[in-house]
Image (cartoon, one colour):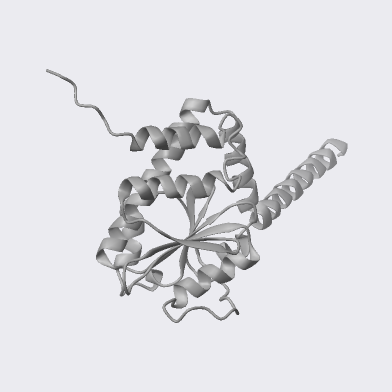
Length: 231
């Protein structure tokens, strides 16, 4: 009888533990995944980090350039020091690697409900689609539409980056905190500008082996004219 009671108690404790774990993951699942992902980055080597970051910047720049050339409006927000979880949760949550074809398929399809709102990038991965952000309450130039106002609004409240492509003229605008600037449509210059925006903000802090000078050196190498080899 005592054995049966002991087994029953063990089973009950196991069930309670499983329920508790499920509750924790339901509430904090996104934060746990970010922590584990950052822990994984902490164990990467310098060369692996450099390759990964440069691949992201190049892919990201190619997306912005294509949409700029075609005058396809877009808003992409990249989380930095502050969590954007509230806006990730109210959007269409996903967890996917960043690749250009997926991003362009979202913004080019104007009949899709996912076309509106922002794509949010968390820890270099796509975290949500069609997330609606707070609009700035400041008076802004009439040339800036709803996407720009949302970019200004979220960056006023959170330490993050917002990149906007204008549907009207194809201009690319980057916003961080209370600063914003128009970026170049030239591939080489745009890669350099994005890298410098990231490097000056501490976004590489989770890459323990990586310094911002590493990225800038890599960008300079990318932009340096290549000498033709003599035959």
